[in-house]
Amino acid sequence: MITRREMLLASGGIMIAGGTLTSSRAVAAEPKQLVYHSTDPNNAEPKLGDLVKSWITPTKHFYVRSHAPNPVIDPDEFQLKVEGMVNRPSSLSLKSLGRFKPHSTTATLTCAGNRRSEYNKEGKVGGVQWQSGAIGNATWQGIALADVLKQAEVTPDAKHVWFEGLDEIEKGGGIIPFGGSIPIAKAMIGSGAGAPLLANGMNDAPLTPDHGYPLRTLVPGYIGARSVKWLGRIVVSDRPSPNHYVATAYKIVRKTDPIDWAESGPIYRYPINAAICTPQPETKLAAGEIDLTGYVLPTGRPGTTVQKVLVSADQGKRWTEATTVGKDSEFCWQLWNAKVNITATTKRLMVRALDSSGGFMPYRVPWNAKGYLQNSWYKLPVQVN
Ligand SMILES: Nc1nc2c(c(=O)[nH]1)N[C@H]1C(S)=C(S)[C@@H](COP(=O)(O)O)O[C@H]1N2
Ligand SMILES: [Mo]
Image 1 (spheres, rainbow, N blue to C red):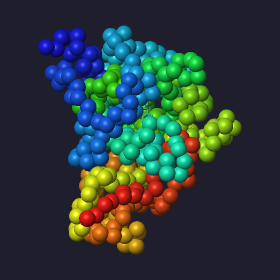
Image 2: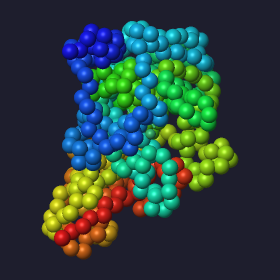
Image 3: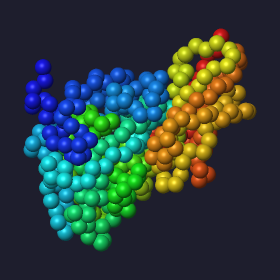
């Protein structure tokens, strides 16, 4: 028995996507089908076989990455603050956000730490030990961030837009919110597939608590960390956010001295990446022709799409071109499939990909202390009988 209150909570309290989300669709969220690295905070990824069942990742198979337990937010009390270098600072309820033009976009979200565990062969890296499932492709419903910024009247010297979550993360003896930051040029893109959204819906259903209910940013083409969940505050500034997750974490450093953090810039985009999803790791295979499937994600730069996905069963002597499936967009993954022959001597299967502007996955990625942006040739060890 679902109470009216629960219905309202599940529907986001108020529709903000102009009819995309209706209370009649508000049903209890489907249980997650993920492998959990931790609970409370929830950090979980799907089994790779589940991940490539469809181009749109159902929410039950969509990874979760949270630094603190889900905050409990009353949609009736919720206010989004818009502050900083704007002529008209404001505090907006879900109802007033509902007056902006609705947008829906399809975009892949991926964690900068996806494939992190592969770095451990060279040196232990801390953080959630992601395999290659910290990625998913969903449709997102909401409004354009640019429309809200335009209404606030951003001043001419603004250079960055900060996002602050309503979660409470224990850090250095205190409590901080999760923060993100994007350059103003990206924030001001108000239409098309690359436009950052203030999203209240995912896959045509209200955001679930795990994914940032009632409101999150969704920044197509940028690392997942810039898509701030449980969004409570937007600050327009002349510099990137001083929040820990912009100023220190999410940087490529070899050592974690303060000087290394200071000298390195925040990561915004992710590089081209691909993985083999079936056969899954540890599967015993029979010699002969086998089917491989996986995903490939272009780098999220406007105009750059995937050109080629190549697989090899003989350590890279011969490469077979895979067939890609799904829309060819700068901001979305594609699924791929290929057939290769394996024999009793096959040790591993590999995939690599190239993009339309000359970008490629390298054989090896230099180790970095936080284990970000692993996009070397994906190597799947196999056992053939
Ligand atoms: N408020 C808040 N936003 C957040 C995070 C968080 O811990 N708190 N994690 C970020 C990271 S690192 C990623 S990869 C994405 C994951 O989004 P998902 O859990 O919806 O898949 O959310 C980002 N937004
Ligand atoms: Mo992430």
